[in-house]
Length: 376
Image (cartoon, rainbow, N blue to C red; front, side):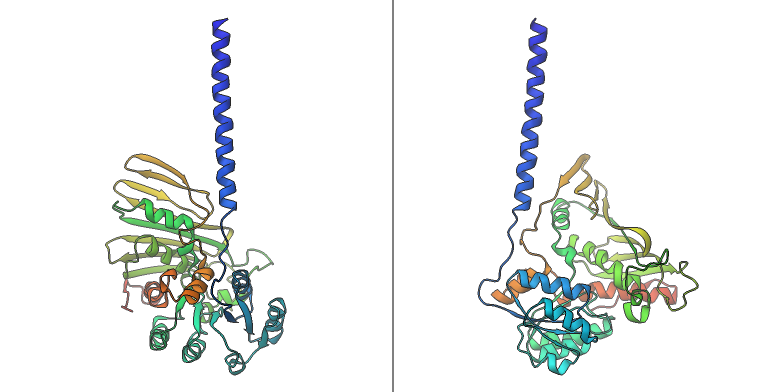
């Protein structure tokens, strides 16, 4: 009889513990779902956009959600500009820069191909219009320096759209490694852009290096910048990369490599390796840090940060929001709204350090040597 009572009591404790854990998990989920949405506080900001494609559509939607008013849409195709302007009621649609910059604006979203940077940035600077520029910050470092000079002269706030700097998992990873030695960073970016069959989910220009800059400039740059953010923004010192195009070989209009391997060094002594494949059937964004007493993985496809620190297992959920409570668009808008540049985690000058790493890696594909990263 005593045995039966004891067993029943143990079952009660276990069941109660499970129920308590379930309730805790539900409470955590509710808290995550209840994350606050940023709203502009002081005035309605007038925002324009250049580029009415996927990113222009997404970023203007985020700006509207925060309380900004989209006042002008520019695209080289009038139909695309008009379509997005119709979604953002009251916005002017145009294919002409002159007409665009006649519209009073507080900020401008630049969502174009990488080669379209110098003219819109220069014109925005002369009008004292704040900028949010999608990656890369420039087609190359030479053009980037020209844009930076205009930005510094104007005094405007210019952010670059490296959204992983606002991703809570990487902010948490940065906190976890504080005080610990890191020797290596390993990253993987896999996406389906090269056509594996008759259907291509992306525009053909992604595979044309004259337009996109290639997979290092267009894809790898996100994780290269994320590694720099997590490690405290060290600057690149040198890089080398090799790549191959062995998909869609019969389509000569595509010259971007579908597979790239990259190695680089940062000025804090940490070395990094990056693997890029833009013909894979699934999407992966993987990041791993390795040191004498740690190995941590923070992959975008996982819900946890996993690994070890000082022999102890880490299997940690990351918060729903970063400590700012802001995404890249919200942070830029709040910086404009308050005049506080501190909300922007990737201003233009900082972003050019990642551009310097990209440029060195791209150059090495032609020279077949390790290339020194230029100073910004």
